[in-house]
Image 1: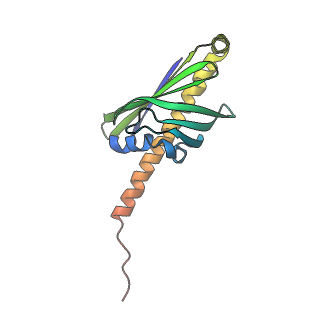
Image 2: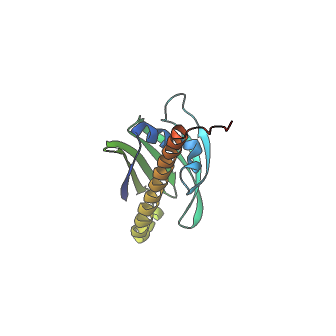
Length: 166
């Protein structure tokens, strides 16, 4: 199963990159994430960053261990998780677009056990639709967080200080 969805964020690529790679504070960006616990930090860069992420999916709280397997700043990073007999790979990819940055989220799942394969056959179509919606929601949250921060920064820098009356 593979899912991909995109959104255009009205911000420069480095600004979007900074937000999406701040895994430790992802709860402040993506509403569906309830908790992030960093398990391993690489000496430099992103590859090897490993964390435990708790979020509500399909009406249930789920905790997964994820890690970054590949990254090129500020173009993309890939994560991997293994759970319930399946391997999940996701990526966030950034491309310059007129007026901002196109952020694309890709998600794929591969069943590796017999029970997981059977589950995919029976319920894969339902999982794919729900996954597409969840990815779109996460991208919407990222867009709102980045653009909201830019608007707040612009307001702070363009507003003039109050003048005191004599």
